Structure formats: structure tokens, C-alpha cells
Amino acid sequence: MKTRNWLGTLALGLALAACGQVSDLVSGKKKDAEVRLTEYPEQVYFGDTHLHTANSSDAFGLGVRLGPEEALRFARGEEVTSTTGLKAKLARPLDFLVIADHSDGLAALKQIHDAPRFMLRDPILQRWHDELQKGPKESQAVALELIERFSQRTLPKDMLDPTKQEKRTRDIWTDYTSTTERYNDPGTFTAFNGFEYTLMRKGDNLHRVVIMRDGKDRADQVLPYSSLVGTSPDMLWDYMDAYEKKTGGKVLAIPHNSNVSNGLMFQLTGPNGGPMTAAYARRRASREPLVEATQIKGDSESHPFLSPNDEFADYGDAGWELGNLTMEGLTTPDMLPGNYVREALKRGLLIEQKTGVNPYKLGMVGSTDSHTGLSTSDEDNFFGKHSGTEPNAVRAGAAQNLGSRQGRFGWQYLAGGYAAVWARANTRAALFDAMMKKEVYATTGPRMIVRLFGGWDFTNVDWKANWVKAGYARGVPMGGDMKPGTGAPRFIISALKDPIGANLDRVQMVKGWVDAGGTMHEKVFDVVWSDPARRKLQNGKVPAVGDTVDLKTASYKNTIGAPELRSVWADPEFDPKVRAFYYLRVLEIPTPRWPVYDALRYGAKLPANARLKDQERAYTSPIWYTPKA
Image 1 (tube, rainbow, N blue to C red):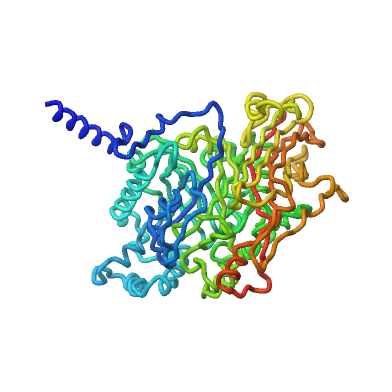
Image 2 (spheres, rainbow, N blue to C red):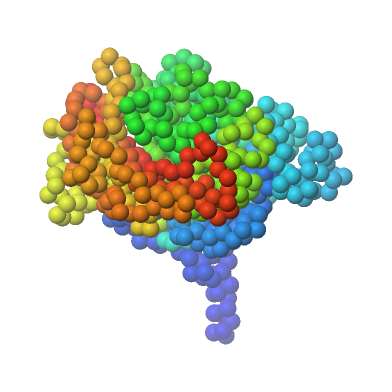
């Protein structure tokens, strides 16, 4: 009798666990609520908020065959086999992952590939089926045609009708949420539910990654939102409102690749071309608290045209500043301000000055946007944008035929980016809440540890005690808003090198402000740098750190730079009457880029104009100052 009762209790427990009502008795995984929260964020968690798998039709067409399960296994640190048969493994596992497959045509090309040909009546779909059957390499033309037809809205009729796609989409979506549920391990590894809303008007990139705070029970009550239905960002926000009302859950959106939006991502006007209203600004700020500032398809922090006095503003621009995503529209100088995050932060201050609300109060993250199912941002472990650019001897030269976009998809790719989140625990709830508070920063790949606090009375004495606790008690962290105080704002700044990476060159404070006349300004301050006794200011500039890169061996030496840089810095030009923002940019010493590793491993012949080394970096979310009304 006791045995029977025990078995019955176990069966009930397993059934409840499957419903997510108690801890998983099989795996021992906890629920979010069972993970202890620290008093304040004590640890930074590194992850990717933007990864694609074979469920993204463009990725599948470009050859990728890895699905969500392989992506999650890889992110957790397991070895997997890539689409092209290479063994792939991270040097260090990630702490969290968002698989953000495209909502439009979710797994459509995969299903066209798998379907019996006689069931496909549309001649375009029949042709795609035949090409896809030839193999990953031969199917790339299908992916490029799909992207072009999607941009031009010339897809087959059934693919343009979301209602006809609903059952197929639901089956794929619920299978995906089941997979994330299996791999989500609160306290150890977080697997978020999410998707990409791929709004693109004739190549102008207005994409958003949508992330849910919630598990399968809530996520399954909706379907990923299609840009074929919602043809403007505010319609996506309507979907987000409806999701929260229906499920009681929470959701946020992250714009990305503003650098190829042809000025549309960060406009000064409202959606109708008139002045932006306070209501619209407020809604955007609440729905889009973050921006993806760096990823494989270029860096969106700033541009030399916009920041001519910034010697480090040219990172990751090569090729990407020429036109929009599909190169259907070339980028002109007047479009650039709407393409870059630093300018958006300044525009936000200007709009706030006029309306009282800042629509671009954005925290910054990085991510990969990899379409390989493999989230890796390491230069020596770069698996490319898609399967055609997985490690090989020709990828740096963009030898593959990409038509009018030739010359953009070779060495110009960045190895990616990661999102760093200061959270009270590694759970969906804690990480999501930290994202909403903007206590996050972007890195171009390295895992340097960066903290920033703003207040009014910080001094170097704070380093002798618990300076982090003091930062929270007497100031605000990155992403926060400073209240008016006495004197000039003072910032606690700390940067530690990636434990297995390069030393640090310098830490800079990027300040933006708008004067009483409505003119926008910016200035980059060198705050603290390595070897200050040797590197004394020259004409207000810190001399270059040096260069230890050996291109023949794809290596560098940490004989220059510093493992740690920290300071308490006060704004020497502070005006209490002027709105301003402050964020850190942390620069490493020069290191080899991924094409150099390809040359070493595969004998790759690199183009003469290829950028072979760079100074990788991190960008913190800003701290904002608003004067008294």
C-alpha cells in the first residue's frame, strides 16, 4: 500500500512538473521563484539575444540545418557538429540565449524542402523545392530570392497570407517553446522564448527582436507576430500590449541593425512625418528599452561622419554604411543620423526638450544575429553569418556569388557581439527585469566586466570599502536616471579585462547633451588608460597604446595595456541646466580579426583592403541627467 501511494505521488509530481507547477523532479531544475535573488546585482551574465536556426527561412535557404535544440546545446557548452560538418564548441558556455527565428515564414523553407513535390501547386514553390533538394550550397540562391521577394512583397500568395500559415506556424512555435522549456535551467542557464519581427520596407531595416519573460504556458497563447500583418512598429507594440493583457506576461522589443535602416530607425518625426508626440515617444520608450548596438552585420554605435573628432568611431563600418540591408537603397549623408545609436541618444534629448518625453532612452546590448545556430563571438572561433560562411579558405574574400551585395559579406562581417546583463540571478525573470532597467552593456565579443555608477559624492575613498554597494546606495547604475544634486556628477568606473582575453587600452566617457537653443553636442573624454606615466596627454589626446599583433601567427601579447582600469571621474564641463547622457566605451589593445585565423588555418588569401586587426570594445548603457523643471 505504501509503495502504491509513493508511485501515485511520483506520477502526480511528474505530471505537475510537466505543467511547470513545481520543480522538475526528473532533472532537479528549479522554478525561477526558487532561485535565490541577491540583494543587488553581484554578477554579470553573458548571452546572445539574437540567434537564428533552421527555423528561419533565410537561414535554411542559406544552408543551415541546425535547429533550436542544437543551438541550445551549443550555448550551454556542449560540442555539436555544424552544418558543414565541423566540430563546434564554445571555450566558455553562455549564461542565456534567445533563439529569435524570423516570424515571417517560420520554418517555411524547411517545410517546402521536406514536402512531397506534388503537394506544392505554386510553380515558385516547386522550383524552390527542387533547388533546396540539391543541398545547402545550391540552395543559397533560393534564400537570396526569398529575401528579395519578401522585401518587395512578391512572395507566393499563400506565403503572404498569415492566416493560411497559422497551423504550420503554431506547430513550429509550440515545438520550439517545448525545447526552450527543456533547456531552461533557472540559476544555471536561461533559455528565453522570443522571435524576430522582420519589418523591412524595400530593404530599409526596421527589424526587432521580441523577448518574452515567460514560459511555455503563456508563450503558447499567442503566435509570433508577422510583419506581413503589422506593417509598422506601433502595430508590433499593439501586439505586445495584447500579449500582456491576454497572458499576464511581459515582453520587450530590441531594434537592431539601425546602421542599415537608411535613417528610418531613429527619426526625429512621428510615423506620419509630423512632429513626434509625447504619447508616441512614451510608448516607444516603454516597449523598446534596449538597442542592439553591435552584431555581425556591423557596429551601430557611431560613425566618423557624425563624430569627426572621435578617433575610434569607425569600428565595424566598412561596407555596411553604403546602403540599406538589401542594397536596394543607397545611404546618403542625411540618412546617417537616423542610423546610429549615439545620434539617437542625442535626438532623444532633443525630443524630450520639446515634448517632455525621451523616446530613445536606450540601453545597449550586443548580439550575434548568426544564422548558423551557433552563438559564438570569438574571433578565433567565428562560425560565420550562415553556413556558406562557416570556416573555410575563401569566406574572407566574399568569393560566394551575392550579386549586387558583393563586397559586403566577406571580411566586413564582424565576429558578432554579446549582451552583458547585471542581474540578481540567472533566471528569465531576473534577466528580463534587468533588461527593462537597462542595467546592461554591449560587447563586440570579449567578456570584459564593466560597472558604472553615477552620483554626486563618490570619491576614491569608496574603493576602500564595498564600492558596489555604495554605488547602489548613493547613486544609480548604468541605465539609470540621476536626480539633480550639488556640484558636478561623479561616476564610479570599473573595467576588468576578459579573464582569457586581451588587456585594456583605455576607458572613455561619451557625453551627449542639448543646449538651450536646441543644438546637439557630444564629446569623448579619456577617463583612465594603461601606462599613464608613459602615455601622457598630447594635444588633449592619449597616445596609441601600441600593437603586439603578429599576423603570421594570429597572436598578440599582453605586454601592453592593463588588466584593470578604474577611476572616479567628475564631469569637468557640467552645466546643471542642460540635459545630458553619459556612457562608457572600453577599448582593448589591438588583437587579430577572424580573417587572420582563416589565413593561418586554411591558407586563405586575404583581400588587400581587408581589416586584419582591431580594438574590440564594450559600450555601457547610459546614465541620464535631467535638470530641475
